[in-house]
Length: 84
Image 1 (cartoon, rainbow, N blue to C red):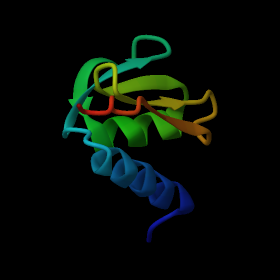
Image 2: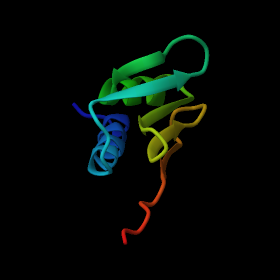
Image 3: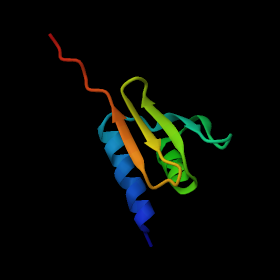
């Protein structure tokens, strides 16, 4: 049975992938739980369950911040520069 949290993780994951996120992202989390490269979906699930952290998907262009209680997630996206 899927929970609301599972649905939220899936929604955030799909938005990040639609924005160009690869399967492996760089994670910085509170404490020493997560530091380094991790699978995006697993990192999102862990941080949204255990609390705060930052996931860099596309350096300088796409990231996510998960708040302290894991329920607040902010997708950070830098607009692409216009061509021409």
